[in-house]
Image 1 (cartoon, rainbow, N blue to C red):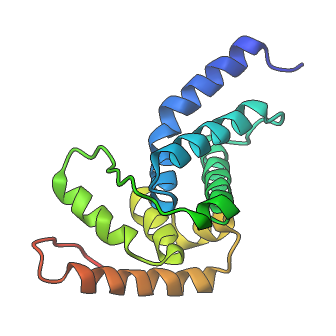
Image 2: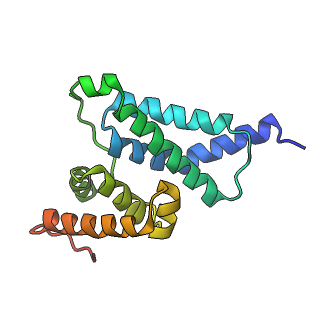
Length: 166
């Protein structure tokens, strides 16, 4: 027996409430353009709405949303139109703490492969083996990316008052 429309609507509403910040952050890390972020955000949740097979668990749903969001963002980044225009709109995430915003700016200055692992490791608290499944990459490569990213972050944040254990 399939799920009713009410159950699907409730599940989508719950997913929006639970994962909208995460999807928005991932979009921001990749795109930093409000219109593109909004487009990808809507596309991700539309794909969720259209998905026919249920998730095995909440963790599976979260991983699926991360993977779909990253793929959608990569599609936008490599589009012809995106390559031909300069982004003029600089937006900030609505973070409560201004020091979080400063740290985020440093994270955004990293190469993309490092942004992914830093975001998933620190913000979503995934382990490297979990990231390997989500990003469909080799664990050893991700350990290297994470190590290099931490080293770069430490260099860029050196001299500031931030105390992080890397």
